Image (cartoon, rainbow, N blue to C red; front, side, top):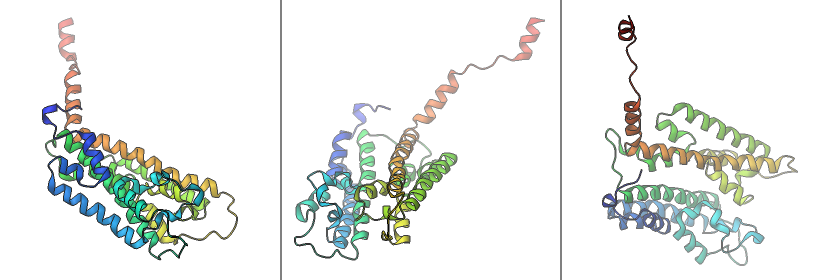
Length: 288
């Protein structure tokens, strides 16, 4: 739904780009200082903690032949672009000569990646704020599209569930988790190690907390022999994360229409356009 120019707080594309590069900058541009401070502290705090725990050495997981100026753009940290660029400038792909990785490098990797996802949620919020879209009557702050998108990432199907679309939520949850479990079994857990499969791990990271729980529960099991279906397993485990992006888009579209009242207006218009059926009794009497 297009919003009249006079209702806009700013240009949505500018707000999104500023937030992408520096969390909170887009909201500051829109005059939302409190939200800007919150976004900066939470998102950059997560990335800073991840950097500290990993020693900034997450990108050492990349094989040397894959390293390049754009190699990290397919990692979840790209959602917090400014911080990722800073990390690349300071530590790049690691130390020379190589030294042992910190014991907390995997936890730090997860926190830095989560900051990118969380910043994407703030980008959604900045985009809607810039458009000046007002909340429809009867909705809570938790019904905001940004919240729905974050919930859909955290647990596949949760966004749909919170919107009352229970059947679709169950289908999304069952299919995506089912594919992930099958893929993990076929890959014998090799997909759960970012150090071993950097880009496949990045794909399954989009599945949210189930991937984290699996990684913690299994402890990233080592590869002890030949994996007959290893490549198929990697594909099956990565694919649900990418499909969850489509689920997040579906959740966002539904939430935006409901947030602005467009869904209710469309239903009212459809009801008004439907002609009322003629009373059968009156018709029969007139015929007689």
